[in-house]
Length: 260
Image: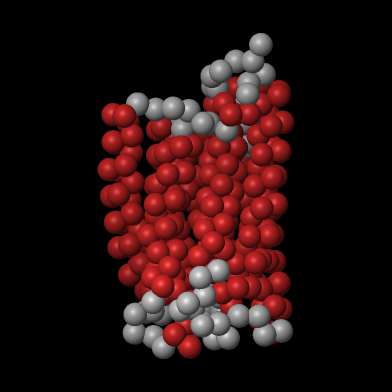
């Protein structure tokens, strides 16, 4: 009979070297996808937005399957259900209210950190590749930029097929990050106590080495999500907040441009 509870301390803990490896592997794959394959597609005339979505969806789908495979393996070892090992724990309404308010405050900090991100980019003289979509470049203001410059080779307005592609990308991105970095990895940092969630948030930001210029913003978001998951012990909290944050900061603007 399977146990319906999950004690984080019972799962095999990671050494510091194993933690580094666990972050380096997906970071390397992401770097190859977005800094090698993506520019190759761009050189062949594929519009930046479409190339980014195709590469992202393909890679993230594989990562989601990999995360589920890892979680399933540990679930069998611990004699618990996959659902339980995925940290799909229900929480009370009172806790939901607390985490929603904390998430909103974190979102405000993420938005505010964009000014720090601009200073970070200028201070280190970081170059943002032009084969990446415009919403990954905080130096671009889409409200005052010519649409032809925002998305060369693809007219965004009226291209309704972009919306479901963005939705699929968004969902896979959240599933990957919350199932792998939070549900699978963070319980394996229990041995480090409170330092565990800080490590998770820091390395989560560093995982995005292929988007180094966004480090300040990613660090704020990564630490916020790691803390919320650490306190709630439920992946539902970070999944919902991640969905809201990504929708407001990424997909909403594109949807508005598509609808015109």
